[in-house]
Image 1 (tube, rainbow, N blue to C red):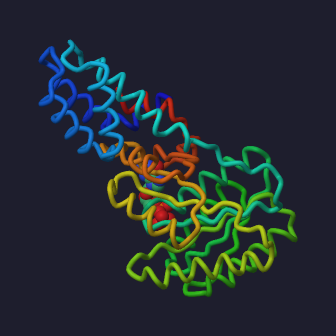
Image 2 (image 1 turned 90 degrees about the vertical axis):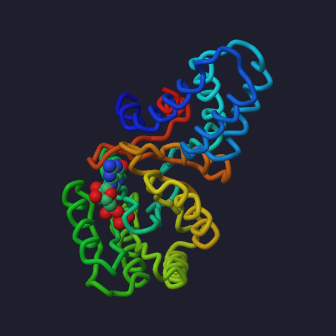
Length: 299
Ligand code: GDP
């Protein structure tokens, strides 16, 4: 929890300073509530959550004395309420062998790093893990995945730069099945410059996975970068419609003041949030806990 609390420090300081700045007056008035709503929206919490917090305060506290701590308590409760329904662990329980996890998202959000962190966690549970380097556009992505494979003891299936990603994924799943792997993590490309091309490629990858195992992929995880704020929200919309996203991982919650975006996304889309990234190291991927997140954000 201390890692999360430290990571979300900037988000919570921004909110907390905003709240302290407003609630120096004693009585809760309409103007104070307007100012508070601005602070909440600027912290990327989203209009819906901001309105819920304002409504909760107006109902219970209007024209009454109120302190900054009282406001923070309401903030925590509302954030937790928005997040609790989506906080869900990623379950890889041996039902599918291999359990196929397709990682999708825009370049730079932290897909490859998250693949590495997940591989480390699964290896720690004694699972046999295979990685497929299906971001065949970037030599750096292929190299990175190779490094994560060595570091975690996962085997890696990769091809040359420019190789057909779907063909590579077909080979990877066939090999993972023949080798008795427990988990196959598929890293994909994320070039948004060519959105149609990208979405078609993802659809093709899903089709070839299903040729080998009709129930695959078992998870489609969208990796989002918290520092991109509202952009993350539009990425959810695009990838959800086109790539059948089943769950989210939000990275880079360390050191951003925009951590509130996870609340806005969860209030709008009822997609499970499985894990959060709070740093670049191998052990900086945490299961997502609504209560802890709310506590860390509300200061
Ligand atoms: P990809 O293009 O989506 O595969 O993104 P990468 O995995 O290559 O990550 C892009 C950059 O973000 C790298 O420098 C990572 O070390 C960094 N990164 C990934 N996750 C996190 C995180 O949770 N926190 C921080 N601070 N950096 C991260």
